[in-house]
Image 1 (cartoon, rainbow, N blue to C red):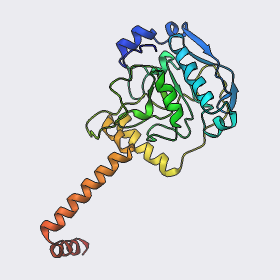
Image 2 (image 1 turned 60 degrees about the vertical axis):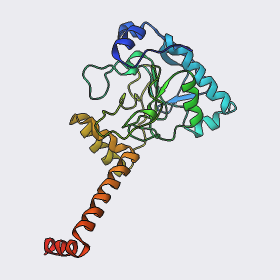
Image 3 (image 1 turned 30 degrees about the vertical axis):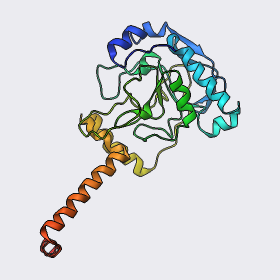
Length: 258
């Protein structure tokens, strides 16, 4: 298995080259073993960095074999919904750090159901296993705000998939789907809209972690962190009631209401 570069800009640049013409010269075509669709349209190839192309093909081949070479099963699980690879852009919220998509070393699958901040999404475990066997890192293992559509070929050591509850640790993210950004395909259809509540939730947490520069709030998309915060608040309320006495608390609430 290829020894992938560590996920820092110096190592990625040294291994893959500089995003733009330098990387574009090293892109090759990967032909998936099953039919894939980009924005609803069938595709015959995926453009990927030559150093990671073999690993991508091996992961896709393993997925195809695991599901018995059954296109209907692949489609039903959303695995055939390709959502982008090469895109020379920066990481969302950064003016300096290149996305791993900019190296042609990352792929997004089924973005509609595995969006940024969707926890572990519904990405099938056999798909995750196939990529990890090639040394790829899965966005569902990110600390804080996850990106379960995303697989990237960089050093995953030190990222075992355990997401510690650290409210002051900056969440990892490589940004949203590259659907509608891949140069090689025509864009015609739009992705199905998430629910109103889901859109509002992502807008609030996205503003804090992106526009407001407070990456810590990305953790609010992780149900485990929300549960811990809720439990902490509940514990404080209970201790307050016990300390003050239920009668005093009721009297205080009445005074506030009146």
